[in-house]
Amino acid sequence: MSNIKDKRSSILQACIKVFSQKGYHKATIEDIANEAGIGKGTVYLYFSSKKELFEQMIEYSLDRYYSGINEILLKDITIRERLIELAKFHHKYLLQYINLAHTMIGQSSPISSDKIKSMANIKRERLKNLLYKFIDDGIASGDIRSDINKEIAWISIMSTINQYYVDKLNYNKEYSSDIDPVQLADFLMKSIS
Image (tube, rainbow, N blue to C red; front, side, top):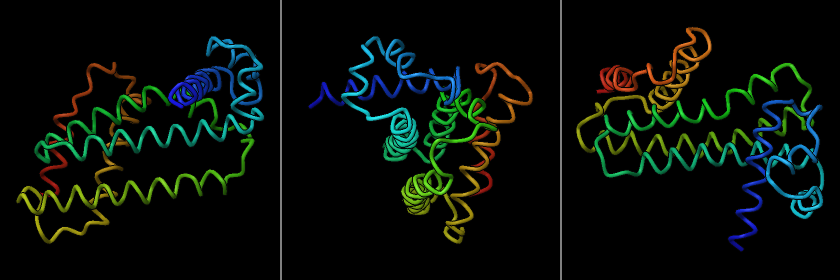
């Protein structure tokens, strides 16, 4: 069971790299197999088509994001420390997936935008619930003010973190090591405490 999961994961990670470099339409199953270090036939043991691979890659990417955030928000550390860790994780995630996003923008997708929205909405709802718990923990510890609007707070936290890193990486072309998550976390703490 674990070997099957590992093999699927290896193929999906290869998909991310190949689709990031070539885009959906130019990438081939053979490219993905070569990147994963397996035969083309092995890919078909796990996935029926390139379209299924693409769809599963999106699902896999969203799951990895959710799992990483879940792990951080459940840590037994202060609210501020969790915000720093959250910012670092988002930064790392963006670095891993930003080329894929750039490559896919402007290309026609093999799956419908409704399907992508549906997949993202399920993860968004789970993410919202995680952030609500994080906010409740902060209220209980006295680190977050009790009158805070949780909906505005969770959206503001995630949007601010995302926009900060997107701006730094895409527009300012800053080196990854020059981006300070502590300043961002301190700014967020001031807005929610």
